[in-house]
Length: 369
Ligand code: SPD
Image 1: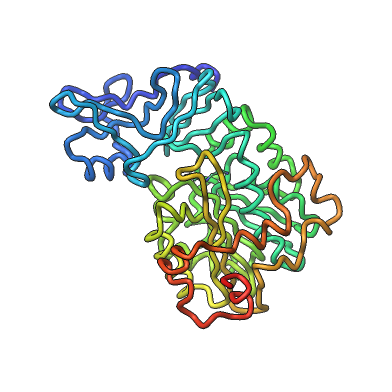
Image 2: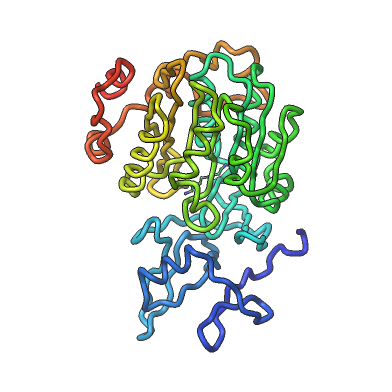
């Protein structure tokens, strides 16, 4: 791994316009590039060489046929780009699934990037990892069995391990390189792997869930990358069905659910699939994460039919769990107040994703009033 630092990830173009790797052999273009190419056919889909003149950006400008610079960016957030100043590149590599980049930024600490998209920075990872773990786990009286889908950096494991009631933490991550890179460069996150309750499974989560005994888990947390490339399947109905099957009655799912500013249609689709699939409740919450596109990220929380789950008012408040607020390190973002506040939605989102469609339950009345 060390030897790779500073190497060009090189999704270069050959004379015939096909993508090639460094030694010139033909290379499969990732689906995200193909989508981008389809939305901007005048450009060749160029992979994720993302550091230009000392700045990392989730998009880049490329010359069109007339030599004019055209902004080429991720199809998930067309027309915008966030940049971070790069102090130095610590690692560049290519796994079987994606390109992996780690750099030291000037203002956000170390940054992990997969396929050209920021996954976390040392400065603001606390908001995402703490929320995606404690929104579901503080909504259950005494969670015991938890599955993490994705989450190979270990940050979500670190957060789950604050809960002493938990006896088993399975994690299914598709990409061993993400785990290795996190252990090397992000020890504050990878510390999550040290908990003896953690069982690591490297492989396809869809397959893993298909083989899981029905009703095995109290909570499933889907900490995926965006639904382009390897995470595409993780927003589709069959995936949610396998999750519902693997949860016990009254079990909960917390799923990364993108930005309300950029992805209202995707959120709407996810909510409608989840309403069909999870017969308990379905809610949307959000948090501020400055280095994610538009500066916010959402969480879809759902429960299966069974003992009702009131997501808005944590029944298992973290402040009352012995040792939890300081376990491994102090909580930086999450507390019970922010938990409830996360379910307050802007009016446009309530309308656009039709969150008022069902007659509001007592819980929803609190959340939407
Ligand atoms: N747009 C980026 C969304 C990334 C979500 N996954 C982050 C992984 C951190 N554990």
